[in-house]
Image (cartoon, rainbow, N blue to C red):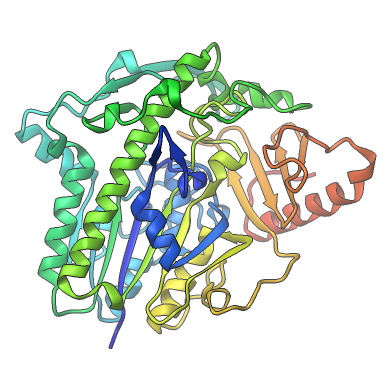
Length: 456
């Protein structure tokens, strides 16, 4: 009998949300239970700390510089003829549904992939208009920054650190619309092997939070990381010209506390939606025969390193939650480095479908007790948001993280000694050998994966 498949993805959710307790409350109780009964990867990394490249790489198993989608290409100009795992599963006989944010750029488009059920953010916006709900961004919630685009710094607007309460009914919030559509698909697919991809919006900014989640966390009772508002020592100067650094300028600790309270409220809301979907699977009698994956596209700096949002290579933005529950497989936990690129081969392996030669590896052997080589390195890139812009390239090993940028400056962090990445040791003599080997590995991988950046 074919295993069903459920993939739930959030947006901006940090890896450290799993097991986190704030203001006396578990932030993600349903995800915590799933992690206890399933298999948790503590060090899972995205291929890009930005929505469209991250989601396209995850769905195709192809690294961004190789598949061509390296920035938020909303119109799909750079989309290639790569088959997302949705289409692979459809060909294998699954009833396939996608509900929620897609931001996956392939040809044909996701709506044209021939899935059995497809609902995305555009469908929500059309529905919201019939309900009298305004989905336009409020100019008062936006901040102006100077962002590099095609070699020139231009003014752009981004959602800032302001927090507000969602003015509509809770059930009209985007993710509850996606919940109802997800349940609708599951009920319609009963009796057939199904694959459901539910991609939630939360906890993405703007931090407009519906009740009762807006008041779940008292900002004054939160325990914040100790590097809020503090840049790393010997940070390359280009970091301060990045969008995340500009968004975090002049933000007070009191304001960061409100940001965290809103972000955590949205994270708990998403977790409750996860719980409702899992409960539906149990009611249907399909929970034990469903391969479940929970992850996010990327995290959020939330004030650490004096940065906000994503688009940088620190752990807060680059490391993602990743929990699998595969029928017949043991629960467990793994601390080696893995990547979003490993998702497609793992899903296909679990479903008994031959792989498609992507850039990742199946994690099923790890779940079955076989550790990956200690010298494994995973990679990530950032190439600008609305178009080609500031360059970041990163390589992460068991102990070290290496980052290279447009100015050919280096960052190296000893994650064993400095897990908060506050001490750039790239210029320290005792790390010279590590720096050279990590740079060589990062350079070689990116050149092999069609990088357009001119490496030195």
